Amino acid sequence: MDALLVVNAGSSSLKFQIFGITDAGLERQVKGQIAGIGTHPRLQAKSADGTVLVDRSYEAGVVGDLPAAIVAARDWLLTLEGLKLRAIGHRVVHGGPDYAAPVLINAAVLEKLATYQDLAPLHQPNNLAPIRQAMAINPDVPQVACFDTAFHHSHPEEVNCYAMPRHFYDDGVRRYGFHGLSYEYIAERLHEVAPQNAQGRVIVAHLGSGASMCALKDGHSLETTMGFTALDGLPMGTRPGQLDPGVVLYLILQRGMSAKAVSDLLYHEAGLKGLSGVSNDMRDLLASDDPHAKLAIDHFVYRCGLNAGMLAAALGGIDAFVFTAGVGENSAPIRARIAERLAWLGAVLDPVANEAGAMLISTPQSRVALYVLPTDEELMIARHTLALLKTRAA
Image 1 (tube, rainbow, N blue to C red):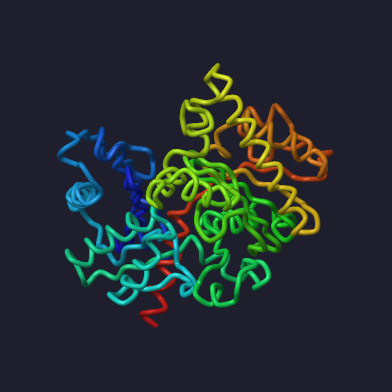
Image 2: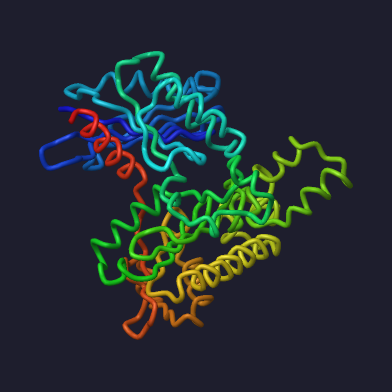
């Protein structure tokens, strides 16, 4: 069977999926990951029906970094029979001002994407590592980069610019927005399950370790909470969200911190982790009796409500609100608390449906429909990769 490999590489995990290419379209065959890279590496993969295909642990030194994880995943993938790899699709967080759509990767594209590494230091270097490795191992297999920024590329200039001298904008200093693959999938999925809402004014909350919100109008991105980098907007697991730039100046000029120390603070030690002093994981915070954990949750919920108001203003009202990603899909308490913050917009939560994890969690009387929709960034990448292959073959 002809197949596509989708790769989503992070600093401590490597996620991958295989999709078969059939006459009817894409068919998920394998879903797997190597988690705990460098600490407790573990390769796991299941077939589409949930059958465990592999569950293998490694010594930390054997899979000590992302390149080693790529080799381990590749060695296992080569044991699969009956699959002919047609292409590899990659999640690449930052496409900068140049890439508004998925692109076939070559040396020039890879070099250009590397220039955006400082704009997404948690993600971009890891996104590019498996691309380089695959190009070296099998240069004949086409690779496609799918960007988290591309979905927001249609924003008008007044939305994307900062109030700074024009030459900065021309040099690429502008608001890009992220989580675009997730928002694109949710826009399509909402059109399937609730077309009347999908054509209207929708706020999607992608709430996970990384968190943001997006205002959709007729399925298109109108505004989003993240900006030039993935530090902006909502507080996240280890990132602060919206921050007065004067804080950064103060840390450098008054506290004597180096640029690297500030970067490490903002990307790795802030957010829920920094505010709580307990954990960057919402599950740990909800289970904790520490008052600082409660403060971190309260802050997160407050900022979600605040940003929802901003996006509602951009849309001129709201018809639906969608929860997605790890926290959004799985944490009924957080959904309930955010829904309370949306009451002024006419949202009324159905607590029974919310606790049950139903798709629709608002009451019939609610003026704002509340949905829980699992995201599927990998499927979105596979769709883009297949479409580019077909265009290339035409």
